[in-house]
Image 1 (cartoon, helix red, strand yellow):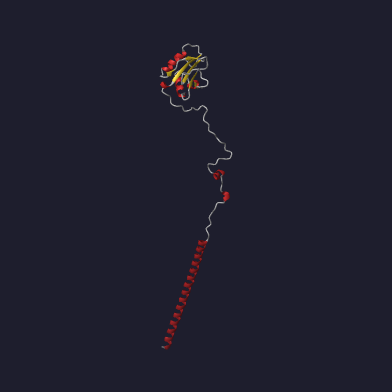
Image 2 (cartoon, rainbow, N blue to C red):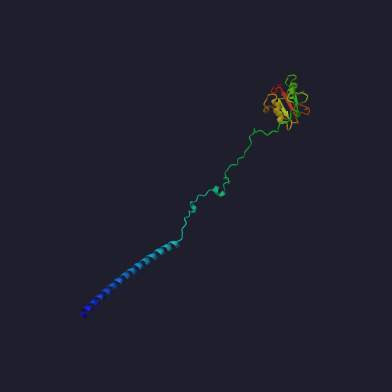
Length: 204
């Protein structure tokens, strides 16, 4: 009886020892795995920290690669040194703006027979202008000269209108009156002189 009890006690002791060894092995395995995970976690954190602390490098285009323009430096309004200065000139035949024509009744016209050899032509010319309501001076004669419609200063528009009464282009006959060299000695206060010359350009 005593021997059986001894055998039973020995079996229980060996079982307890075996369980203790297994427990230690499991604990050791847990510790090892925990240490491995801890070491790996620290390594990853250091990598992240290292990346975070690393300076950011900005990509800069070298100054030599940037194209520069003399015009850009000087400004858009800067002209090249060799630029030619362009002067805009009005056409030689450009028309000057003329004042409006006056009321014909306020304009006095003198008609002159400038050596046409046609009797009464100055009178007929005076009748033509009178029919358009112009005031007329006494028709007269002169020794000779080209046909023209002379105007006193400020009466060019009116002289052009009078020239049209004789069916001629005003540009071909209208002339400024030179007070120092009038077509006749006595202008009779006329603002316009219709001079019918021997060339026959003006006819009545």
